Length: 430
Image (tube, rainbow, N blue to C red; front, side, top):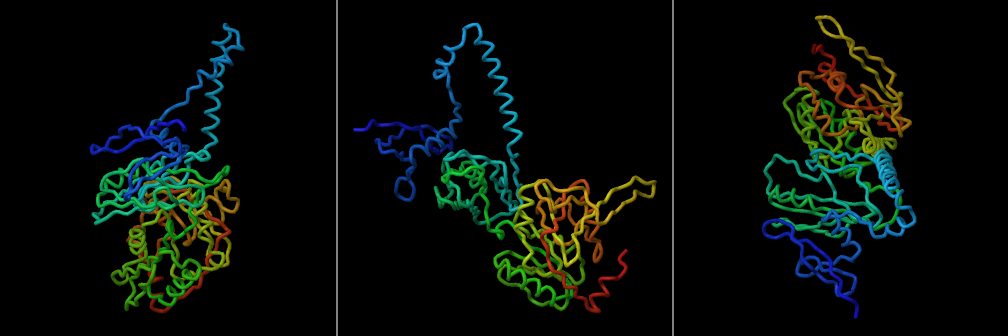
């Protein structure tokens, strides 16, 4: 009969503290861990070993196996040998840290905070997913969080919190529900990721662009244009959410599947509409487009998202129409008591973005851009700019947002104007 092997597992008692208990696998290579839905879930011993070590925060001890190596070194040299090894290990750790990606966490723009890069797991290893937290100021009947991996691993929890229901434990899609926000945030602290598919240098990426991007626009007296824009978005991204802020009169209904139409007071203005649209975004990224733009084959939102995912940029643009990409250098020159001077250098940039040879650092870009939602909210749009004000946002963003323009993503531009529209568009607003 195979020997009975004991493993340490952790359970949450009524005081919500971890207590070690003993469970045996009877020599079959599995450990009973917890009872769910009337039956016992099981981990294989190797996977559970990682979870157990994750909770215990053990460090390795090689002192016994080192005895044979020390025997080959003269006694009087061992002290110097150890000092050299310590210094070499310190240098190694510094090189390792410099080569690793930093941990970046998107803060509450969904309103789920989560890591977008910087977590590394060993083959068949398990890690805690740091930075998971719901930051929500609204009272809700129920909170629901869905976490999804693509192809290299599964999601699970190392403990179950009371009054929280979890579905998909040990699978690629994990859904967590609770009526209480503190409870769901407590549960998120115990979410872990386990690698199941061996690869080197691979990255888990959720390929569903609709889960991370919302398209927003502002329309005024151009319903033919906005309908053409919406139709083109549906042709290429049928499931992506679109938010339309509208201060036209009379109103034509634009509400549809994946389209939210927000009606504003008449002629309230462009920046007021931008603020409204941005306030309704629940994804980490947003895409701003004018209402007379049209999506085409080269309108690759995935490309812009990849730039944001793999850099520290806050905003990245493509090009609109058939012209060249618009990147601009803007600098502030100290002036006199009447104010400073803003120098604008069109068609100039601050250099190439590392890793993206077709993207260039810029201070002002065109009206087709993808940005981090929380970064745009931090700057905002001054509502006193009703019809003119494109540059104002980028002046306000100087020194706050890092942005670039890329020439390999394009959106069509069908200029549409009416006499009534022109009265408002070109009036002197000061």
